[in-house]
Picture (cartoon, helix red, strand yellow):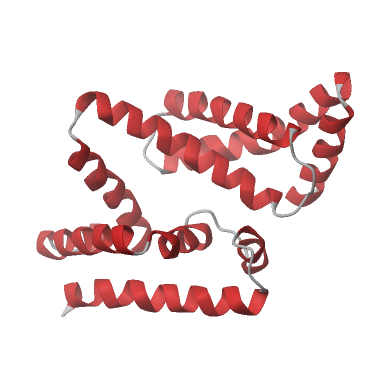
Length: 192
């Protein structure tokens, strides 16, 4: 199987060629990313049907976005950001119709919390503390949280994150270390 980067580069060339080639390029991306998006969305708590619908929308957004791309840069990281943002937009819209804004923030915090700590093993007081601290971290350090999500949730490598945030490899490695330390400073009181 080809690497994601090779698939993206080949698909991008076909998309930019236009016509039937663009259709083949879109199909290449769809075959590779669609099942991965669906799996990711199901892991994020979506039903299979919702995950498939969101994955279709994400694929549309990816192909539409790639049609205007000039340079290849951090396309793999960008594709996963588009996929995540598509799901978050859909989740926010669904929750907005049912609940108040503060409820939405709590729901998002819980899914992030499940990623950063094994909350199933936490007692309710610890879990509540972690949720509040993670919400606070998200409000006060949104850029740090995005970098941590790229590493933990999206599974991007350090070089991919470096490209996505436009930093050198060494600077990104140090920044991620500082992000982890900062997050731990917020979460540590919950375990004391």
